Amino acid sequence: MASTVADLVYWRDTRKSALAFTALMVALLCLMHFSIISVASYLSLAALAITISLRGYSKVLQLVRRGDGHHPFQAQLDADFGLSKEQLERLTERVVHHVSWGTKTLQRLFLVDDMVESLKFAFLFYVLTYVGAVFNGLTLLILGVISAFTFPLLYRQHQAQIDQYVELVRNQLSNLRAKMLAILPTAKAKAE
View 1 (cartoon, rainbow, N blue to C red):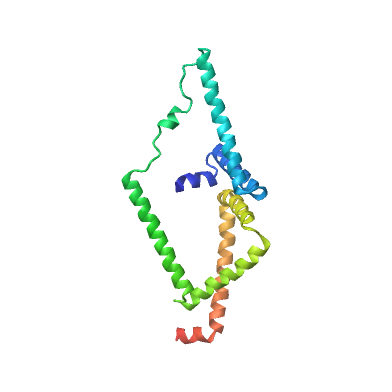
View 2 (tube, rainbow, N blue to C red):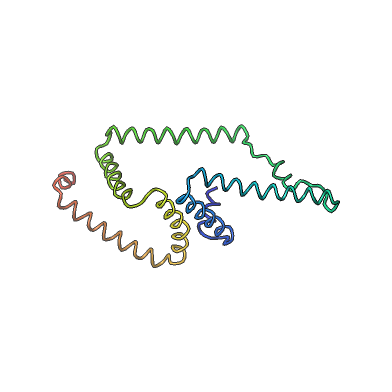
């Protein structure tokens, strides 16, 4: 699945990437103007209108003896979308692992196991209050989708220049960090 997502965001197949990007953007823009129930209902009605029309068309062709009477969606009806026992066990094991890791991490952060980590976590939420005041969640999701389909392609096209600037910023940050550690008295005590 990760390779499929990578293929989409790197635009390896332009038609599939354009279709995925357009579908995501249309769905998200619809959600900005309508409730999720309305959007889901309209999409379901559109899908049903298409499938019922195709099924009715095949029946009419069968009645006038021009068609073979084959169900147009027989391949999809015969397809097995179920999970095997092994796949289900692996999936359950992964979900349980991620949930327990997340629970343990949140427990450590909220119950201040490490003061510095909890302060960083608090600072993150403080910054998010300002982000939430400017953007709503759907706007951030739209910006995320646009970024996911734009930045990997731009990076691949201009990788040398971007890497050069990133290295400059990284050097500046390491110099700034070294200066800050030299100024702080606790850093001097730990260094000795």
